[in-house]
Structure formats: C-alpha cells, structure tokens
Length: 125
Image 1: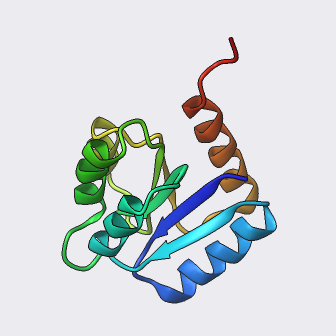
Image 2: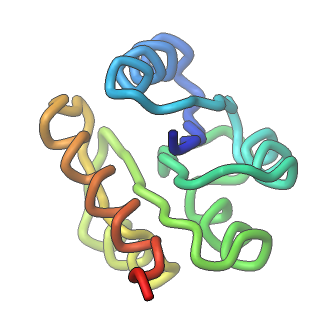
Image 3: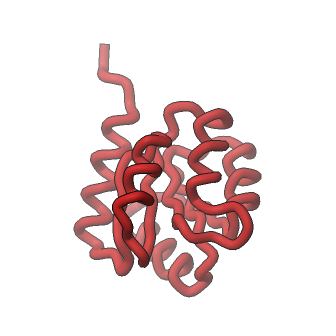
C-alpha cells in the first residue's frame, strides 16, 4: 500500500482528501504547512506527496525545491484553487508530476495517483 503525504493548510479539505485516499486504499500522512510536510518527509516512508501551492510561510514551490534534495524522485502532485500558467510552469520545472485544480474529482485524482506511482516505480527486470 502506497503512503501519500498531503501538505495543505485547509484542515477541512485535507481531512476530506485523506478520507478519499483511504477509501482508494492508500495510507495517508498529513501536514498543514511546508515545514511540517518536510518534517514528515524526513521521517521517511513517503511514496508520493500531494502539495497545495498556497501555504502559510513557505509555499508549495518551496516544498518541491526541498523535496528534490530530501527525497529525489519523489512524485509530487501540486494542487491549487488559483491555477495560473506561471505556477504550473514553475511547479513542473521543479519536478512536479502533475498539477490539479481544486475542487478535485475523485476519478481524476485516482488516475493522477495511479500514473504518478506507476511512473516512479522501476520497471521489472
């Protein structure tokens, strides 16, 4: 079972997303800020991160920068309620696997997770 880290300061959204991920069969870790997310990441065992771009203090782009050093190859899906071309381009430049706009559809989320996790796994020998 893949372990997914959610980094989002909106507690209600984070809780609902965690419930959805649990229903989809994933184990979930949660953090309400970039700093808390990086601490969770440092604990190890994270297979994928879902990160809001707008966070208090350091933003989601800062998380992507730090995660690239702390956990190279970690697939990250960035979320925002305020999609902009510049945010998307910067997130992808920093290694984000995908960019989704809130509110999330369950099917679109499940497909993005499946693709990200499959892309991050080495091919069988």
